[in-house]
Image 1 (cartoon, helix red, strand yellow):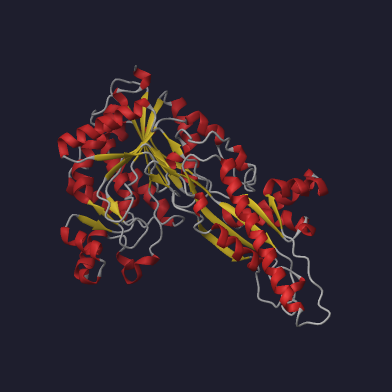
Image 2: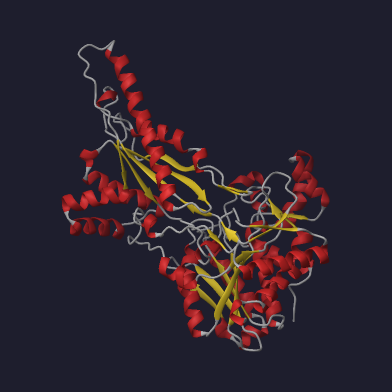
Length: 545
């Protein structure tokens, strides 16, 4: 019996899912997986096929969910429906924080004070077909729609198999999806199925304020997180020229990296935003009149089809340009100080730039591989930090072992890393997209726009065809965390690589307190469009040709 198909039913289902405050890393992230498992276990299909519905543990105790519905004709072709159930925090809601996970109540409360809201938000409230709340858009509406598709699969609507995969932690490290890869591989073997495509339902992102287009996607943007470890030379504040302050170093680095237009990549109408800093601080634990020893900066760098060599070259150019400015600045200030201070000796202010692998090899040459392994294993056994901070600590340990090289800037990479992926040129996906565009135009008078890259980052990065010819190893060799509690699963990704697409709901303002979902297209039209897409994916798979 279907109960997740009408606009009203889908809205109620969405609200029940949103009420689980599944902020990444919270206990509610565990609870929502159990809730999804519970509501699916009430379906007669899963009562008869209990082994097809499972919760799979992550190392930290969180769990991901898989639900496999096999078609009646017992075919191997399987479409994966991919979603995530975690959300970002709600601090930005201010006094409305307690209503952030109660969409209907929040929407009513906002309506009471609509005159104080931005004009575009007020207009949507007055239109009446918008639902506000954390996760309504990103991406519990997509999960809601996929549950509706699973229900249709149970009723025999599709000529093939449908596998729902819903994961935690997409908003931070994607550890849910990384854990899911071996799970998918295991299911493929034990259930004797074959994955022909992965359909994600992340919401569509507007390309500019007021953008009226309805987007579908055939790929997902890539992201690297480069870190710059700035190791200075300490000094007493009374003798500032006796060293180089890493806070000074990092300030010039920030000028080179923040919003640097050299990193903007454009492919037709697809444009990546420039880098922005996500971490920028010194590493001094306590206050004293000694300058800090080191500082760290990490930057969000998005890409479409650039090679890792090109990205790395641009990062090194930025670091070396910052070094020139640091050295010139210190020299200028020292020269001025020399005019007023007797017997002042001009300091040496040369700063070096190293890649992580260069620093690592230097430490190995000096102390031997066994000692480096021992030290890194010891740090790992005592680890309390997250991925970014632990990556920094591993670099810091090597820098301390080679401290005579300071002052220096060390470039390295930290998780999360999202490869750019695309099926835009795949004839199979092109055919399916053209079909649903025509279908949507004829049935709903809506023009869908096929955009190559979903720009909000997604877990499709771990199953889709990568856009760059670069070997991922070129990046992971400079990732301190690789083989230190983390392994980027390049081989597993290659085994599972499949065509990808993203068809999701319409919303606005993801990760903002005005996050909202448009209900008419999302829950009236889109269920039929998604069903059509799944039907076409199964009917036109190259495996059947």
